Length: 294
Image (cartoon, rainbow, N blue to C red; front, top):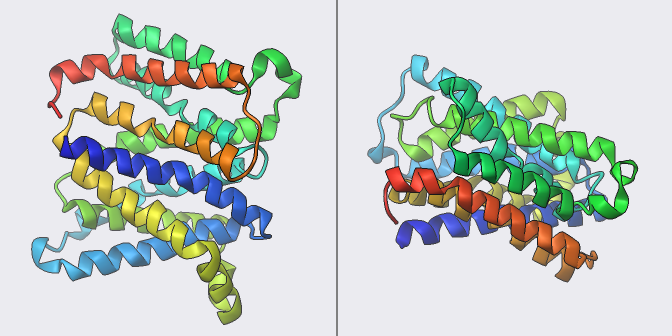
């Protein structure tokens, strides 16, 4: 029960981020500001946490630390592409596109293991794809009604997140969870800074303006709180259950889009959201049978 609650809280924090980024864009902030806030400032926050509990971990060797930071490029690329998506589509649509990482992960797993996924997972892929088509209102909009730049960026973010999950499960796994998170977020911060430099850090007025509005919120909930919740909660429950709970960011984003951003959501889109959640739940069934219980 405790593990499930922690993962749920982490998923909720991710669900809030897209609405906050949309508000930041409305207030005149740009991609460099939101990316720099979450990753660069977030990395600094994580290192403060790591140093505060330095007695609980051993200093990693360069042979371990460097690959972990390089793996963090997937974290930076995922965040960069996802927040770029929000410049072209609504938070609700962005998170629908982002959650395509669920079936992408199933496909990647099948390719790496050189075998077809189990029937429930194939069924989950179909349900998620159909649900996604409904959630983006494809029957009414048609293919021509989609913002192709936003759609391409959202799917690219989903693919990068698939690679991030794969790397997270295989690189630096023996490190302390918070130290590992700090290294990966630092790697992502370095990568993203090369693409979209956080220029606001160079000017005191700009720095204060960003941090006092949305920056600290994005840094804390995007790089510290969510990472801490998943680091503490995920080991206590099965991978399948963690995936299902992680998908709760979708209804949170939809709810905030309606309440805060005043964006319309049709019954057809809500049906699609429900189908996506059902598909993700089905995808978690096989893993739950062989994994840990909550």
